[in-house]
Length: 244
Image (cartoon, rainbow, N blue to C red):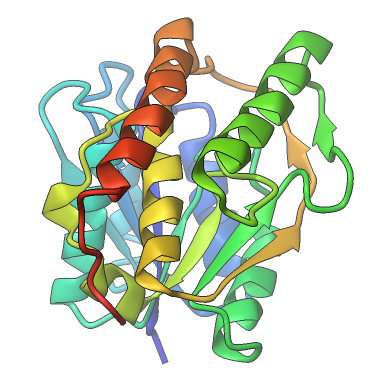
């Protein structure tokens, strides 16, 4: 029954973490949650551990020392999930920018409709972003266009961080070869899955900017993504990707 794991990386999410855990665990999806906390000084991990008493069989946490990057948090979570036999592994943010009600849609795309990777997409049916400044909407939208152009992927939202993977995708991708830690991590995972030959689908979602807590986005993260895409493309010319 519990073949589904939702991975939520956190850094200073005390305003959101309890609510997001309760909402996700109340879904008919019947999933587990793994929180990867990067030493949040605001006590995020303590809130999670107190909730573990209420959800001892469904809520787990890995605590890391310091901010080690979004990419390494997810890689840690992926390996944890594979070791414990989960069949469907989700990525989502803690701040409700990803609506938990969309999790069953991502699961259905993989479990019933044959996708290996389902992406919660802001751009597959127009621009579905709420409460972002126009400058950030344009930056994100054209960043996805740029990535799509350079890498040749038929994916509208190349930088999306709301996803469902079938287990076999994460088993096939050589996780230790994923090198980017920030924004470019999301691009690298999609591109690697694409180069391995997996079926990727996009599920339309509405992305709502966080109401509580502080965004972790900065210009350095965008810089990594901009130049990282070129590195990915060049590297792909000299790399043999594993087949599913």
